[in-house]
Picture (cartoon, rainbow, N blue to C red):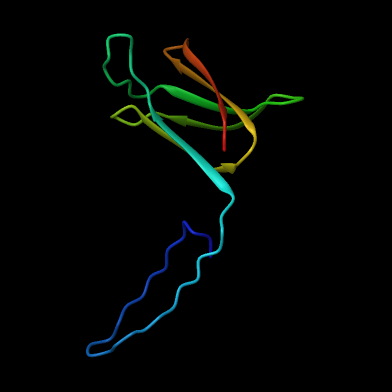
Length: 101
């Protein structure tokens, strides 16, 4: 079980459950963010592309921002260079290079 996982249980009436959970180190990373317009309003429905960079740029994942302009990618590898490109209405809004630590 990695440190980000969860488990479910359903105790019976009058039952006492005792458990021990051992979390193992998790080397994965994640990135989340919010897209804003130049006027400071949140942008919903923007296309956010995540690329792994290096010798060869490779598209890893794509998401659309939610109603609040939020996006999330994960899990992703740590210690790898990534690039994010954001588009809205076929117009590139911004590029951002990320180094996961």
